[in-house]
Amino acid sequence: MGYKFEIMTQEQAEEIAFNWHYDAEYSFYDMMADKEDLVEFLDPQKRGEANFIVTKDNDIIGFFSFTKVAINTIDIGLGLRPDLVGKGNGMRFLKAGIDFAESIYTPPKITLSVATFNQRAIKVYRRIGFEEVDTFMQDTNGDSFEFLKMVYQCKIR
Image (tube, rainbow, N blue to C red):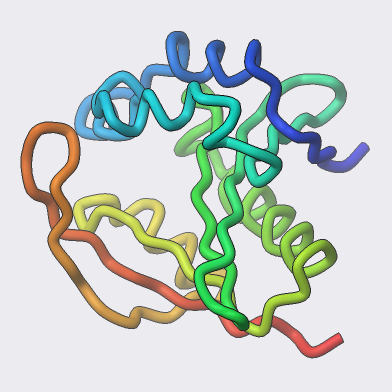
C-alpha cells in the first residue's frame, strides 16, 4: 500500500508538536525548538488546508506543508517521523510529496529550504533532483542559522 495524504487535524498537529523529538543536532527540527513555529503549527487557521499528514498502512509517517509563493512555485516543508529518519525512507517519502504536489497544484517548480548543517537531507534532495539556488541567514530557534534554498523543476504533464 502506498502513501496517503490527508489534511492535518488538530490532534495530529499536537501529536507531532509535542511528541516528535529528533536526535542530537537534528533536535533543531523539533516543533518545540521555536515558539513562533510552534504557535503557527498549532493554529488551525494558519495551518489551513495546506498541511497534510502522510500515512502508510494507517500509520503516520510524516507531514508536508505546501505554500504557493509565486504563480509558478510551490514551497514545501516536510517532516519524517523521527524513528524513520536515517533509515533509507527519505527518497520514497520526498518523491511521494513531490508527486502529490504535482498532482494537486501542478507547479512548474517546487522549492524548499534546509539548514546547511543538515547534509543528510541535502543529499536526498540532490539525489531526487533539487538544485541549489542560494544560501541565506534566518533567525529561528533563538539564534541565526544558515539555510540553503533549493529548487526542483517539475515534469511537464
